[in-house]
Length: 170
Image 1 (tube, rainbow, N blue to C red):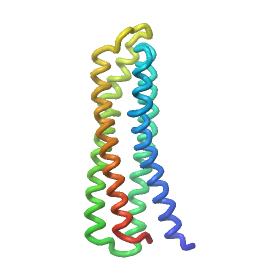
Image 2 (image 1 turned 90 degrees about the horizontal axis):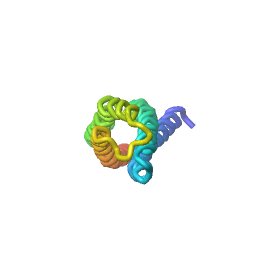
Image 3 (image 1 turned 120 degrees about the horizontal axis):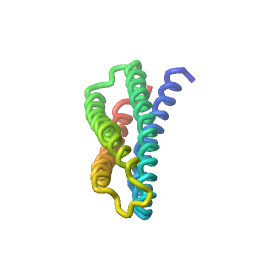
């Protein structure tokens, strides 16, 4: 087997695993973890939800970095094999738009809301009977961004499938 097809296949595989990691973690948080925390007492739920947020954030940054690295590598390896054409670049531009939107929303979660959530979580006592309103307000905004990213991720995935079919693999 020639090195180019092997590296391209490995890069595409890593790209798909990274995307699955990111979107899968988002989906798990939205559909399993978040609802499970709601069934807990507020004192316990506040801390567990923040721990889950930290884990999701770590997984997300790993996936984002791998997506950028493998996305560039995939483009270079496909470009080596010949002209990619206008259709490929058009689909790629739209896919990049959705990825950048996801990156922006994740950055808002990580750099705007996460520090405030962490601070308010640290201030909450384990004996609280209700979620503190400022903390709940920040979580609602954080979850809205997570829902948006889940939707954008599915759309970006569809454009990725379009890229794969636009030009044969090297």
